[in-house]
Image (tube, rainbow, N blue to C red; front, top):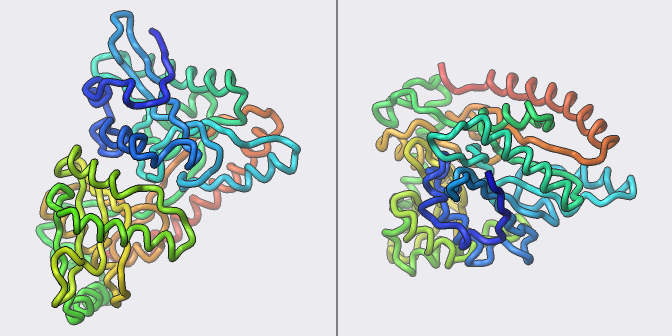
Length: 380
């Protein structure tokens, strides 16, 4: 087997990358990752420097790949390690740059070791993990981090000595609901009334909502949606890294996998929605990603970001709705606490020991947190 590090997705044939198991998830497709690079959503300016790992067999066939980035900050990771960076600083050491295996700005669980069907998965996965560690050491980096791996990759990395960190998100699972009313019928009476009251509030405001796939939006609608997206970061003090051109490109190259919920007010043209929510989907899962608005309407965020997505999942037969990071308020709307993971290889022996001890206590606390939140389920 022969390994190569490339600094651009353009150096990888799209068909070969997309044939790897796991690349069916929209964020892992060649079209998505290459659009991030082409429109400078990643790169020197953002501190996400592509260093993708490719593995070829003796016949020069791509049999595995890992999306990875050299990072000069922790922005856009949604696994918060600033305390670790501070510990390095106080020890007179440099935490950055580090190597991160992840999808930029996307806290969605999925495979991170992309492997071709028909090969010895365990053998190739072990080879990939060893190569990642070797690459980290060769560049004399502080650490290697794999963010939001699925269970199979997490277990493979843990078996090779990476430290495992537990987090929590809130996901919805489809229990073969016939429609939204059938879903709400499983709620306790008080929680069911709350959801219906919120939806009536939006309806009384005169707001109507439409669900369109990305390729169905006009340029004017995309401009409005991107304005909403940017406004949320401006309001919260963040930095909007995804450009209008990026969204327009992936809406064309990933048809049917980008869903936009438009909130429209009476009297306004269909090219001027007052709010919007951006989601992606694959065969099984809807991923809620971004939201923004021009004006505040009571409960509109819940309607656009959650209830419309839930209706879509039920209608489309999707099995899961992952609405993004954080948010205990999601529990009362049917999204239950779900563990997530990250895996970490720390080069410095003493700091590795300190982080390992920290993770023992943090994991215990996170497990208690998840269990206690489960007691607030809205379901009967």
